[in-house]
Amino acid sequence: MATTYIWSIDSMSTLPQVNGFTDVVVLCKWLCVGVDGQTSVTTEDFTKITFNSSNPDYIPYSQLTEQKVLEWVFASLGADGVSSIEQSIQGQINSILTPLVSASAQPLPWAGA
Image (tube, rainbow, N blue to C red; front, side, top):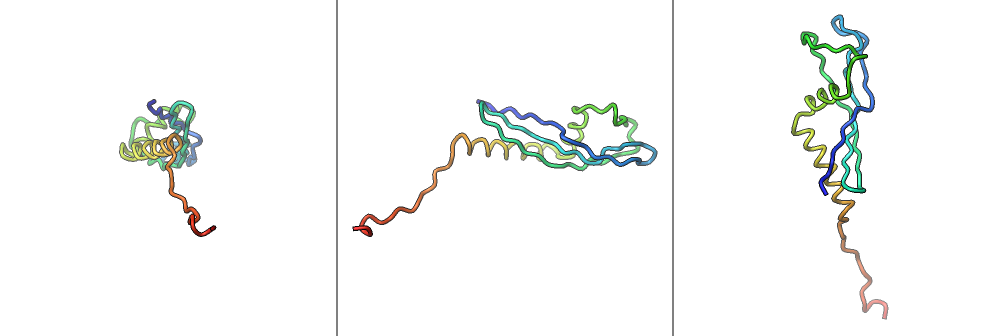
């Protein structure tokens, strides 16, 4: 079964004012959940958001959507960063679904006789 990755924003931190703009998001806590059948793995982290006050597309805090903030997170992480997070989750899922078998020390058969 293919793993589905579900990204979400858990919280955001703001500065009260930056160059005349209010409640500017500067830090996001995100979650990424990988789901493969009945198995799921969650990872979370923080991503710094760089605010560009010359960008005419400023969105007031009260009008932000999770999708827009996720776009900022993905842009900050870059394609390689997003891929690395999802690969790490996939590795953890693989370890749950197919645990590694480790060799274990056994008593010598002649030592107990």
